Length: 261
Image (tube, rainbow, N blue to C red; front, side, top):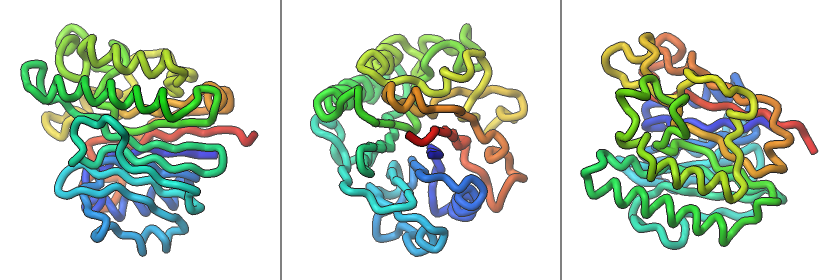
């Protein structure tokens, strides 16, 4: 099984690259964030022509999440109970047999002094409460997407400069740690414990080439999935302007491989 998560930063702008990624990687699941499309504008026909089904929780001109898969899901849930910002499309979950796949776009938070920072913490608390209530850590559950949190100082380019700022503050990391304590595993860290692998780079200032990035796009899986995970890699090349048609997203896809049961 191959699962990919990618914040496309507008599916309308990145559709050719998305179709190329499907052709190149042939994933079983592609989880998208920041699609920035209403469901009525979602390119279902293009996705179907590529051999995939799509379920989407749409919004424009911001947010929006989707799951692309080779088969139709058994059930789909959008949003989650207790979400403090119900009018924003940030979470979609789908079940396929005994597997649950969740695509999530976590609140940015803007700045520690901004009211949205407290909303972000409340949102993460509510997300964790829903997960603990709705799922079993002994089951097959994966939540992946743009978490807008670096798990630790290995995941940002300059810990001295950035630690304590939004995305890297202790309250945010504590919320992420609570998800790991519940039973999720940061699948990337099974295979690589070194610093310097990033998934997001600012468009400005040559950040990609200067390696000024963050690892905020994560794939978290329960222990049964972690035991089957053989590889997690970041398609850094997709972030390059020359790697495909049109401008790239500021995020790179993250790809996880699993053995069959």
